[in-house]
Image: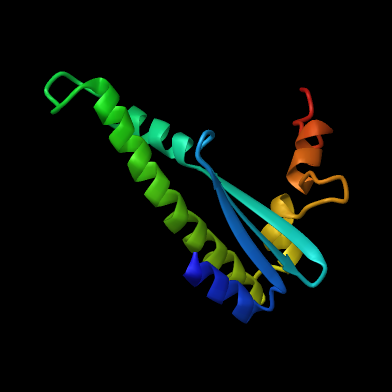
Length: 133
């Protein structure tokens, strides 16, 4: 997170913070850039579930299934930090080189006055529904 903080500070962010919810497995990064509040979440449990789907437990593996699940979760808890760092770095770079506007890069993660994100609102209002044929 030190690297993310340094990156965002160099990008012009005026504040930065992060928090990990151990129960839900969610890592949250928040920052402010030119009056825009942004919140980004990554889920270690989601990563662990994907890992277990990719390589399901079998009886040839060492240890019990519960131990395997714990190892996958531990790997997910490490991976989400790298995933967020890389994703944020990619978005910031896209803005810096003019490939995207700030809003284009972080649109789904920009916080609205009600505390939800733009993506939450789009999903709630079903704004991306495909037309019926």
